[in-house]
Length: 261
Ligand code: GLP
Image (cartoon, rainbow, N blue to C red; front, side):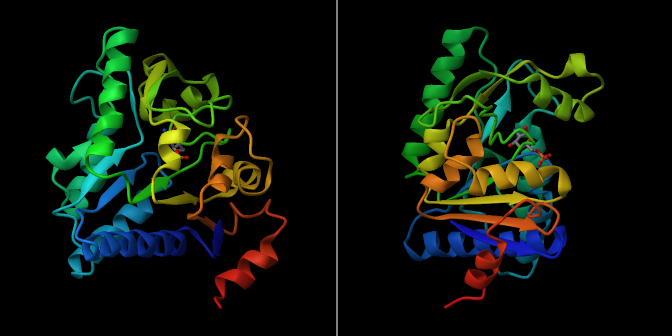
């Protein structure tokens, strides 16, 4: 795992954008359509803006790329502005020129467990069908969740329906009119699914993320902190600003490593 600590969120966004741009270039060089795993939440928004600027400068092109969302709420009507499909169309597709038809999002429209399970299985097939995800962008919840894999999620889990924790629902209530409007369930890529991406890129900024970042990067590999699965991946990058890095004990070594060979 590599850890990059930046002075602030803007620099974190620029550093993370470079990683995505490199991954896209590598896929194109290998003759494959780039496949980018997309996260919602506020953490990657700066990164998406930087990617849009890079597109404008002609440094990267997403017209042939596929996007795969990490997760989706269950039960929101199609077109709901807070559905992760709509959020990603607005924040990513429109900004970087990724065609909405090439954006795949887990299917949260199933009316019961078996329909949702069938949709989740189709999602896994879709990811396999494009040859896997080149770079998976991740945020992290204050309780250590990635995607919507709440603490206790199996480290080998696949895309499936999950209940949201009350803490996550409270955190996400700011996007809805009231807490009661926040869905209770979601469909999320599993931790095993996430681990199959060729590269993982976690972005976290701000003091509220410091405990989760410390637990994910330096705590034990445990289902109690789903973000700790990054330790189990051969090519995982963590980009954090000073505030989010505050709980890291091994900071000096990360800075030395970031200085290069
Ligand atoms: C949501 C998303 C996660 C995201 C997390 C943190 O629960 N499902 O993918 O990482 O929130 O969000 P934020 O970046 O806004 O703190």
